[in-house]
Image (cartoon, rainbow, N blue to C red; front, side, top):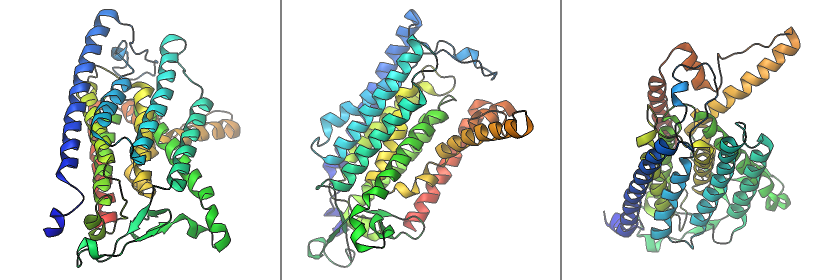
Amino acid sequence: MVFLNNSSLSFPLFFRAGVSFILSICIALFFYKVIILWNQKKNRIGEQVRDLGLTGQKEKEGTPTMGGVIIIVSTLIPTIFFSTLSNVYVIILIITTLWMGGLGFIDDYIKIKYNKHGLSAIWKISCQIILGIFIGSTMYFHKNITTISCKNLYVKPPDSVTVEKHGFKTTLPIIRNEFDYANILHNEKWKKYAWIIFIPIVILFITSLSNGANLTDGIDGLTAGVSSIILGTLSLFSLISSNKIFSSYLHFIYIPDLGEIVIFSFSFLGSLMGFLWFNSYPAQIFMGDTGSLTIGGIIATLAIITRKELILPILCGIFFIENISVIVQVFYFRFSKKKYGIGKRIFLMAPLHHHFQKIGYHESKIVNRFFIIQMMLSMVVLILLIL
């Protein structure tokens, strides 16, 4: 208990995080209500729903979209007021939010004003790659981004323990060992070029998760609910990794100055819950690409910052499966058309959640079961990393 009282997880951090969480929810609830009432009178930002032959689809026509703008606003306002803006991790998260939010906003604006297809895939992926290069380069080369290997903190007072700083390392799931990307390059002279491996991995996670969240956003409450569970898990990891005692007990990499991202995480979680209040079935507002692209980008960035990016295929399994279902559907259709002269499909419709809709499941049942699956995935990750 002595160590807990002396830990770096001080009361002011929790206080600021709690206030940020409450403030973000209040901001989100207020502005969503205003937008919904305004759109009912003006009907200027209503969703144009494509006819996919799904039950209840046409009833969604006219529902206000671009709710992701409020997700961004209600996240950034508490972050600006209650976090340390000079912290490099907070800066990375703010830039990620603005960059992906701006990309999604342009896409939504084009869909509403000009055509329903929005930005081309090339433009989206190019912008995601640019963000991935920025995050990967900053995480690898920035002088203030370090990790510390803590030993025997549970038997010695924290001040008497010698800590050893090392290069860029991450966490391997299952075996819980620290893994240095430089070890992939066995030649000692080449290890300084490990960023050539690391940055493409960052780009892969940024693009796949942002697009996965975007594809998942097809049923009321699905993306916001799943993302809230994922974010709660990553927030727990950030709390552990920011504390010498907890990280030592649980074999996490200790990351100095990481605690400030808890403010951002709680603000983001509050904004998602405020959105989910009006987005649950039947949805009164949609997040649009402004929200879904931002959510995927932030989740990937948080995992990279906390050195847990290699657990994303498990933790964000729903997003990856939604991505894979579309890729498999498209490739199999093209393959079968080329080989048999007629295109065949594996799923009734992709992404996967639409397949279950075609089978006859109500979207509320699909969402609830996806929530259960996500909670199971989060528990699996916790077991792999902690036990």
